[in-house]
Each structure stands twice: as C-alpha cells, then as structure tokens.
Length: 307
Image: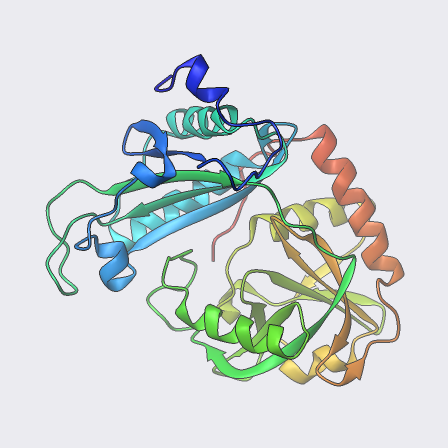
C-alpha cells in the first residue's frame, strides 16, 4: 500500500468526518485529497473529456464491480481513453476504502484525457486517473420528480457513455431541487420518456412494468440491469418500450433506479400525484433488490447490454 498504517489511522473512524482530508488515489498513489493537484490543462477540466463510474459499497466491498468495469471500458473506448486492468482497479478501490476506513460508502473512478492543449484536441500525456470515496447519502423511500423542457439526444456521439460532461444534468437537477423534487426526468428528441439526471426509470401502466429502451438514449444503468435480473427471479415481466413522456403521469406506480438510491418510488410527477407510492410492485422489487445484493455482491457481466 502507498500509505503507512500510522497515516491510515489518522483518519478517524467516524465515516465522513470533514475535519480530516480523505485519502484518494491518483495515478498510482494514495494521497490526501489536498495533495491531488489537477493541472489547469487537464482535458477533463477543459472540455469534459473523461469518463467515470460511481459504485455503492456494502460491507467494504464495491457492488457489481464487474458490470461497472465493463461499462467504464465501453465508455472509455468510445472516447479513445484507456482503462487499467479490472483486477488492478478493484484493488485500488479497496485500498482507498481501507485508507478512509469506510465500509458503507460511494466510490468513484474517474479517467480523463490528461494534460492537453487548450481546445478539443487531446494531448499525448498520460491520462489522469482518480479514485475517491465518501459516505453515501440517505435517500427517502419515495420522492417527487419533475419533467424538464431539455431533451436527451438519442443520436449523440456520447449515447451510452458515462461521461464527465454533466453540465445539463447539473442544470436540470438544480431546477428539480428548486421545486422540491428529488430528480429531473428527460424526454429524448422524439418526445419519448428517457431517464433522470443520474438514474433510470420504470413505469407500471395497466399492470405492466415498462422501462425505456436503450435506443431512447438512456444510459445502460448497472442498477437497471440488476432490477431486470431481480424481476426475472420474481417472475415479473419487464418490457423495454418507448413511451411518450406524458405516460409517466398516467402511471399506476413508478420508480427510479441508480447505484446510490437503489430503488426509489415516485410519489408525484410535476403536479400530478401517482395513485400509490411506493406501489406494490415497487416494494416487492425494492425488497428483492436488497436480498439480491446480500447474496450476490458481484453479479456476472455476461449479457450486460450497453445498447
């Protein structure tokens, strides 16, 4: 390890203490966050040339690491970025968690194009690679969402890429929070329901569980994939279907899925209250999801679709 036992113990065990700088990993070394200097010429800062993954950590172990790595590799490939070996990256994540004495946390892996010219062209320097962890925020069982006038571009060059170019998500989520909502929901350019700023969406219409197709432009969520696995185990049929954004307001029930929120029921869409939140199907999936995590901390990446 890159840190001494004495240094590691300098971080108190009250996870998330703001009085001590957390440990992070940057380009091969575990250091204090304040020492992880990023160049003002880093392409991730200049133009958002980077990819990332955020994993939920249960009992000190990153959940679904194999699927997250596959998506990271896919995203990086589309941008022409390189990723480390999967086993090496997992070891680094564990090292960061141990250094920060975190057992329940979120951990983020970020890769950028590194030092580059002041423009879209990428330089020839090594990539910048960062791994950081922090306590996981608490999510309510249900929440309100709003639909936003901005759209996802299902024909974008970055479809399916978990890119650090998150500007439109920042704007949309800020608008949602201003209106007392937990998430902002996008349609795509065709007016079809797509996704949230950091989550996928499932809708129950006429007793049928539906979720937007990946062709809609939504991200292939790791938690989305686990929910599909859970539903298969439960014998609940899920149809991937393109549906108008307004169908969300007609839902019998609906829920969001993401690594940190897991399964969160939707209680209100704009000014329309859904009939029940969390609904019976949502509750069943939510409970089964937690059981799935406990017995299967790293589900196989085989069959995990990106498009």
